[in-house]
Amino acid sequence: MYISQRKVKNMKKVISLLLATLMMLTLVSCGDTAADEDKVYEIGICQLVQHPALDEATKGFKDALTEKLGDKVKFDEQNASGEATNCTTITSKFVSDKVDLIMANATDALAAASQATADIPIVATSITDYATALGISDWTGKTGFNVTGTADLAPLAEQAAMLKELVPDAKNVGILYCSAEKNSKYQADVITKELEALGMTVKVYTFVDTNDVTAVTQQMVTDACDAIFVPTDNTAASNTEAINNVLEPAKIPVIAGEEGICKGCGIATLSISYYDIGYKAGEMAYEILVNGKDPADMEIEYAKELTKKYMADRAAAAGITIPEGYEPIA
Image (cartoon, rainbow, N blue to C red; front, side):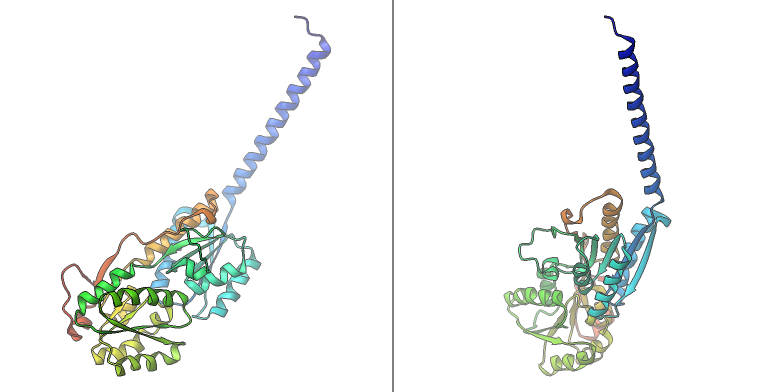
């Protein structure tokens, strides 16, 4: 078949243009790869308050990302000192700074972050119930928007069973928490039904802030509570000494929602590792930042291991016999 020289020249031009385009695309791709490799991720951390559980969660989060990204990640770590208004200020600044991701540690931090931005990915931890924290009525296991993370809830039915196991003669049980913490109310509502199903009468005692912790706790002694449950409440966690100073002399045993509270004022807890849920949150953040996962489609993750733990000296002082299967808290 005869092909004219003009057609040959035109074909050569087309081939040359195609090769040039291919080379440009390759160079752009290489440039993007280089840019990705040089990227330093800026992460804002808003922690509601400083206490052992939240501190461990933040540490786990940072460790996970540092192990995966090395010096390609920077943290702006801020503590709100227990004030929800401070959470708002902190997270608003993160948005202004255009951080790549916000880590929200505890419910008020999450609420503030989710109000501050609908665009920047948010990974939360130390959240009891995401539906309650975010006001989601049709919960499916994931939020459907720019929030995901890990939860710190140990099964409340098992915690009620622990109270019954350790204080079998308890008839009147008090639940102590801060009225400002939505997730504490959620726990109180759920465990009340579980305790009532076990034949106990339940009364809720709430304090507004640190200023009335002692007075409210003293009322539980006056009312002759046989045992007390303290959920994973951040204000309570920061005031365990005040709670213990009232309850230990009265020999009223406390079942605590987490290990830090148990160390401060409890006899036993169904413990999770806050470091582990923080670490898992860090892994989730990595998937969002590096692998492009959408937090809207990521299931909330829960603690994998639960351990029965107890405070030996305090249990003995309260006259509580600890059965087999519990580990002492160091």
